[in-house]
Amino acid sequence: MANGVGTAKLQKHYSLLDGRERTVAVLEAMARGDAAEEERLDDACPRGTYEVDDPSYRRRMSYAATATQLPCGSVRRDLGVLRAVDAFAEVQAVLRQFAGDRADEAFDAGWHAALAAARATTAGAGLGVVGATGQPLFQHLAEIRADALWLVDRPVAAVRRGLGRATAVQLLSTWDAFGRFARDCVGVGPLVLARAVTAVPEPVSDPAVGRPRRFAA
Image 1 (tube, rainbow, N blue to C red):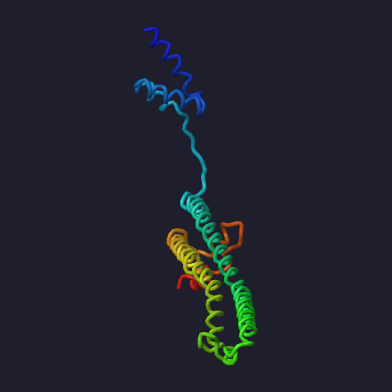
Image 2: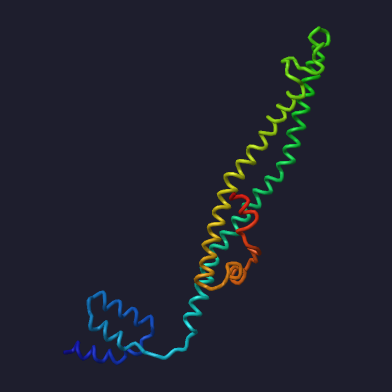
């Protein structure tokens, strides 16, 4: 009886509980299996009429912003990687020139050393156009240069085929999926959505053309 009277008195204050207090009380009632108390607490929750923005607009703006940041960040990162690969490839011309010049100098040094050693012998008579192996000198020099340039060309080609192509394929896949989301779920093009939501104005042009396509080919 006493418990019943106490509960009845306590019920009068249920409507005064704030959100946190009501949550704690309901969870404690649920934990001890007191369904009646849980129901009384829930029924006493104040009800009100609230004015909110159109959910179809506000939700769409919210998930548009959330779903844009990640793919655009990924696209910006991948574009940076492709620029770095291109910069590495641009150094290739300088490296090739250096490697070719060093091969020429090494060949000239070896040739002059062989010529000096052969001058006192009859073997030196034929060293003007044909080397000691019987191979034409210019052909021999061309092969040496090709070997030297291969050491430069091979890593550049490997980076472009490996890192460059994999990054480009990933970028294009991300942009394609983001484009479908922008058009089908939000109703605008991917560039419009990217420029509207992201603080960094990139991509400023469609990433699906130009450098990524060249690497992915």
